[in-house]
Amino acid sequence: MRSVWTSGLALRKPLARGFRAAFAGGRFTGVRRIGKFLFLDWESADGRSDRSMLAHLGMTGHFLHSKKRPRERPPHTHVVWTFEDGSELLFADPRRFGLLEWVAKDSRPANVGADPTEFALSGEWLAAELAKSKAPVKAFLLDQRRLAGVGNIYACEALFKAGISPKRRARTLSKDEAHRLAEAVDSTLKEAIGNRGTTFSDFRDPDDRAGEHAERLLVYGREGKPCLRCGNPVRRIVQSGRSSFFCATCQRKPAARRGRNDARRAGSGV
Image (cartoon, rainbow, N blue to C red; front, side):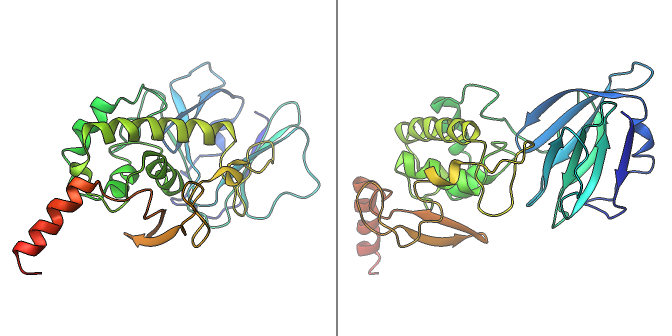
């Protein structure tokens, strides 16, 4: 590492004292991901390799790699690592919700659950976890303590693929539905990663390319447009401050359950 430049502005947390000096003479040796967290493994000048730089992109953060120093750095650039060959790695973040901090290499972010891309997400495991939750299934999927890495866009997409309403209580899902949802989460994440993510406005990958998955979304952002399965309009509701997009026809409650609910309402005089 030749040098490190910082903007002096705080991100989600201020950069630690000595952040720049800690990079002197060392090198990055690898990149790993757990959920929404990145780990840039580090080897210091004296050969120590027990630390990593933990990074979280927040809402608008992104890394850019340039083979040579650009004439003008992107707006809102907050950290620039310049390597011995003259290439640069930049971290830009307009809203400054991102995070950069040193952690032990073998550490794991606190309160982060299983990453479905790290292990084979099974219907049996998911059914057992769903049964413990009173929350709507959409909120369950977004809870990073349960499943790490599933964001709002991909939760909507997975629920549509599985034919499950985002309003359903997690513990009401049958074993068959849990299996369908496990498969839908797995395929949704794999497809999105294969398409380098979803870009609506400013997200770029390290090679400064926009993600291509927005063109393949089935329900997210399609309020009022025809459902790609049945043709009825896609609906949007707000759950815990987040937009949920779904098809009320393709993701309706199972008929048997609707019948029981109707019977309860009739019996109570509602």
